[in-house]
Length: 362
Ligand SMILES: *[C@@H]1O[C@H](CO)[C@@H](O)[C@H](O)[C@H]1NC(C)=O
Ligand SMILES: *[C@@H]1O[C@H](CO)[C@@H](O)[C@H](O)[C@H]1NC(C)=O
Ligand SMILES: *[C@@H]1O[C@H](CO)[C@@H](O)[C@H](O)[C@H]1NC(C)=O
Ligand SMILES: *[C@@H]1O[C@H](CO)[C@@H](O)[C@H](O)[C@H]1NC(C)=O
Ligand SMILES: *[C@@H]1O[C@H](CO)[C@@H](O)[C@H](O)[C@H]1NC(C)=O
Image 1 (cartoon, protein in one colour):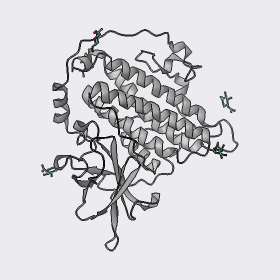
Image 2 (cartoon, rainbow, N blue to C red):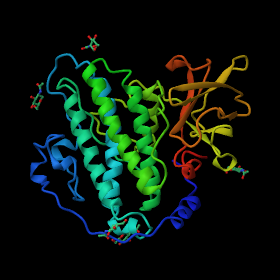
Image 3 (cartoon, rainbow, N blue to C red):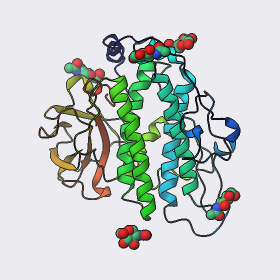
Image 4 (cartoon, helix red, strand yellow):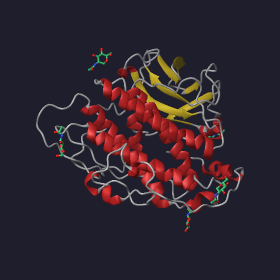
């Protein structure tokens, strides 16, 4: 993840200064952590502690206890649980790194830390939900070590929070295409709603902007390509040996960045793309046509892509300052199959407008 820190620092100056607040009343007790059920326990709602609400027996990979056939959606929920560990761990790291005054002293509302703790509780609930969705015939992946590079900086943490919640919405909508069971599709939608509420909170309370993303959030069809982006946060070699490969299957596509100093990254503006890892770049064939495929809401727009210049124009007809725009490079117009994608996707955060060029830039 790349940031232009001076711009982040300048954000705080314009925010109103609000008084600090001591907070916390909840009957949630860690003694209940082993038997706590999401939907029936305050541990996953409003438990205020710095310590994780997850019992230690759930904080690791859980090997299969049966040898029968895998459940129909086991693979989907293994991928989702592995992704969830990175999101939950981000929140737990924020809960541990900060206090309420770290946010109020920079002008954010006196409920900011309390909300972060509650979102951590929700994400811990997601961990338990996904563990339970995986049958006993499949391993339940455990947490790796993660590096978020927020350097104890509350502002950078809040920028990342917005980006991660938007990203989780993007892979949850895509994952619902993979679900075999109707009940899994409904579960994914219900979880996606919660991630959107987390994002709505930050858009209103933190960034003081409209929370709306227009009539539809952005659907990206190839969810595992989005999950692959979360691998950037994993400390190499730190995952439990029992964990299955993540994501599975993975294309290990070259990831995209853009030069944030040359663009607004808004519809109609030019995007100069580059690759995150110089050792993982596409092999472009001279006689082949390539496209940058842009996704916004339920719309998809293909623009010819010249690998020699790597400049593309974001379709001007997309809504301004709403939700996200995603883009990949494909060797077929509209990227009709997963295999037609040769690089990406890149997630362009369009909202809040002031963060657009801060995230995922080179
Ligand atoms: C928290 O902030 C709100 C206004 O944003 C204020 O009304 C309230 O008194 C504050 N609470 C404390 C305990 O400072
Ligand atoms: C956060 O606040 C605590 C006091 O509550 C202080 O010791 C610490 O230095 C602050 N951290 C940052 C990053 O401002
Ligand atoms: C799976 O294993 C757990 C722990 O051993 C057990 O409580 C649960 O009943 C098992 N579930 C099924 C469907 O067998
Ligand atoms: C899912 O719902 C559809 C529509 O109601 C139904 O036709 C289908 O049989 C259901 N599938 C499963 C696996 O229950
Ligand atoms: C933008 O940043 C790139 C990489 O740091 C640099 O090479 C380029 O000169 C910059 N362009 C402008 C217009 O500042």
